[in-house]
Amino acid sequence: MKRCLTDSIFIDHPLAHVEPFRPDPRRRAGKQFVGSALAALAGAGGFGLVEVRDRNTEEERRAARARGADWPLRAHSMIGLKRLDNLQYCLETVLADGVPGDFIETGVWRGGACIFARAVLAAYGDMERCVWVADSFAGLPPPDAAAYPADKGDKHHTYTNLAISAAEVRKNFERYGLLDDRVRFLEGWFKDTLPTAPIERLAVLRLDGDMYESTIQAIEALYDKLSPGGFVIVDDYFLPPCAQAIHDFRAARGISDPIEDIDGIGSFWRRG
Image 1 (tube, helix red, strand yellow):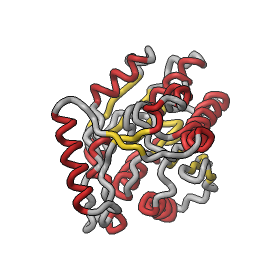
Image 2 (cartoon, helix red, strand yellow):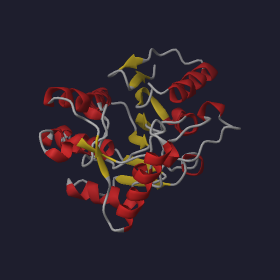
Image 3 (tube, one colour):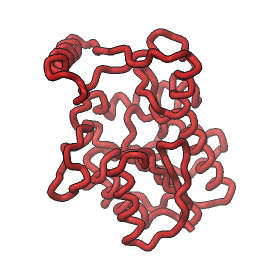
Image 4 (cartoon, one colour):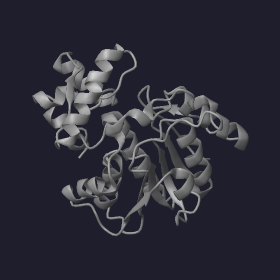
C-alpha cells in the first residue's frame, strides 16, 4: 500500500521524474508568466503541464521519495514512505493499547494518508473507527497576515495543483476498494467545518495544513477530542509558520509531551 500510494513502486518510470508545473518566485518574471500561461492553456484542454526538476540518480530519487521530499506527479500521497511508516506506527499503537477514537487528517491532497489509515484499520479488522477526511478541496486560503502575521507572503494559495476535488479523492478511495460509510468527508475551510464537526473522540490527529492559520485552526478545534495516549502528527513541522503555530498552541495549553522527529520534515507527539 505505501509503495503504491507514493508511486515508489514505479520510481524507475519516466513519469516518476517529473512534477506538475507550479509557480516559483525564483524564476524570472517572463519565464514565470509563460509557464503559468501554458499551464492554464493545458488545463483548459484537459491536460497538465509538467516539468523535469529531478535529475538525480535513481538511488537519490528513492531517498527523496522515502522522505516525501519531492512532488510526485501520479502518486496519491506526497508524504513519503517514512511518514507513512510513522502513521502506521501511530495507528497500530492506539489499536494495540485500546486508545479510543477515530482518525482525522486536516489537509489531504489526493487522500493518500487517509486511504492508508483506512487500509490499516481494515487490515486489523477494526469495525468501529472512522476516517475523517478534512479539506477545503479548493487549495489553501490566501494569507490573512492581519490575523496571522506568520503567514505574511505565503504562496501556497497560488499552487493550483493542491486543489484536489472531493470527488477525485473519493475516486481514489474507490480505486483501493476502501470507500465505505466509515470514511467521512468534511468539506470547507477549517474555521467553518472543524469546530462543529460531529466527531466524538480522536485517537490520531494528523495535521497537514502547511500554514500557521490552517494549523492553529485545526489543532484548536480538535485537540480536546484527542484521547490520552493518542497521537498528534504534524506533517509540515519543518515550515516555520506551521512550527510556530504548534509551539504557540502548546505553550498556551501547557503541553510538555516531547515532540519527536520523523524524517526532518514531519514530527509527532503522544498525548500524555
